[in-house]
Structures are given as structure tokens and as C-alpha cells.
Amino acid sequence: MTDQNIFIEKKTGTYKAFDGTPIYYEVRGHGEPIVFIYGIACLMNHWHHQVEHFAKTHQVILFDIRGHHKSTPVVNMANLKLEHLAFDLKGLLNHLGHKKAHFVGHSFGGPYILKTYEQFPEIFSSMILINAFSRNPLKKLFGLEFVEPLFNFVREQHRKSPDLWNTLWRGLIDNPIAFQIAALAGGFNIRLTQFKDIEMYGRGVSRLELPIFFELFEQLLEYDGRDTLSTVSCPALILAGERDLLTPPSYQVEMNHLIHGSELMKIPYGSHCSQLDFPEFVNLKISEFLRRAIEK
Image 1 (cartoon, helix red, strand yellow):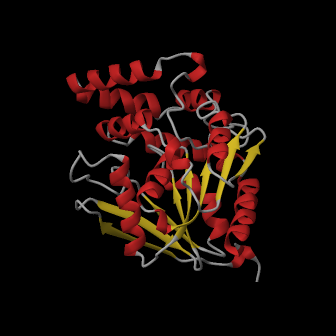
Image 2 (tube, one colour):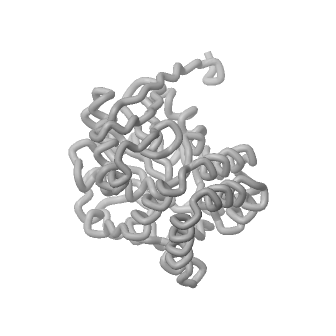
Image 3 (cartoon, one colour):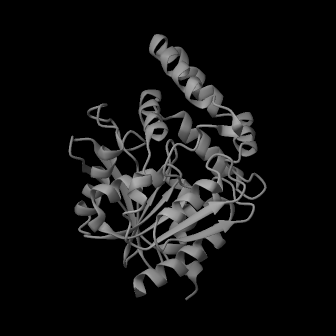
């Protein structure tokens, strides 16, 4: 039987987090569990290449971050800090009956993993960080300090005219021009990533409620996990897209220096979404790393 003939059942479910917020999840395959965590305003589709590959040998676990897609409504909007997200992840593992797992995080999924490790290091078999960061990577995007002032301006305007800004948000994000801009900014390698994946991402972003986006984006701007990095004792792999302008490779190099014994792999021509640009390469490097981690 060839790999193409293997059917892997998808199991879905929802569990209630500590405050009653529903956390939606999907599980495929059997074996050691691997949990994949996407970034702010992203969606599970970002991992479809990895799901197809790793569900043949592991139990692959995906979930929607609180406030995203099927993990709504958020019962208490005050519970959108990274520490609350960490409790969601620990609760998901408990719900599925696992004491430990391998965790893969992309972009904001990196701080998510690091904050979870800070609170629950005992649940980590290993961590894999893809185009991630341990501190605000947008402080001087393109050499300019405009992200935080722009963010604060938009948030304040939304408070004044929420309906208007909700409409503007959907119109700005979910259109082909926005996809081109995202590609030029290093978000995607438009020559390699399938357009349907970029399109699905745009739709996912546009459907995220702006108050939730604001709260989580503020976590991104304020987070500094450099002290946590030096405490990581589980095996760690760091993947860096060399053409990622959103979280430049210097941030992944810094994490590699601070996590003792971690491995760093740079992805030539890789954008911010390297797992979509070069899925076979990323899957190979993760597979090799997991074999080494399991053998230790």
C-alpha cells in the first residue's frame, strides 16, 4: 500500500477552558503527540502539509486559539493574555489524555510556546519554533518605528466607530492587493506558496473580530521571553526563513544563542510562512529532529 492510499481519520471536538471558553481541536493519526500552533489571525490550513506528513507516524493535534474561528465566543475578554492561552494548551493536553507532547509554533506560536513552557515545562517533549520570536520583532520594521503608533491609532478609531472599522478591516485584508502586499513584506513567497493558501489566510484574518486581534497583538508587542529561553531544557529546533522580513532571522539566531543545545536551521528563500513555501524541506528537518529528540 502506498502513502497515497492511506486514509487517516480526523477526529474533532471541543473542550471548555478554565473560564468556559470553547476550545476547538482536531486530531489525526496515532503515536507520540505533536501539537501545531499557528500565529495571530491565522488558521489550521497553515499546517496542512505538515498534517499530511506527520499524521502517518504521530498523533497530530491542531486547535483554534481562543477567539479564533471555532474557539468562540471568548467568555471573558480579559482572558486573552499569553498566560491564559498557556492554560488552554495545558487543558487541551489533559483533555486528550496526554502528559507530554512535542510542540510546533509558527510566528506568534513561538511566544505562545515559550509562555506555556514557562508555566508548564513538564509537558514538553520538545519544541520547534518556525519563524518565531521571543520579543517584539516589529519594533523597527523596515527600519522605521511605525507599527505601534499605527496600531494604537487604529484601536482608538475602532473604539469610536466599531462598525466602520470592522467593514474597513474586512475590505482591506480579504482582497488580492492585500495578498500582494503581504508577499512583498516577506509574509509569503508568492512564487512557491499556493495561492489558495494565501487566499484562505486572508479570509481567516478578515473574519477575526478586531477587539480580539487588538488584545493578542498587544501581547505580541509587549512580550519579552528572553529570560525564559535560558531555562529551556527540552530539545529545541529553530527554523528561520532567510527572506522573512516580518520576523527576521536575527531573532531566531538570538533564540538559538539563548536556548542551550538548541538547533538552528536557516531556510534559503524562505518567507515568514516557510512551512508553506518549502513544506518538504521543513517536514524533513522536523522529522530528523524528532528522531534525535526521541532517541535522547
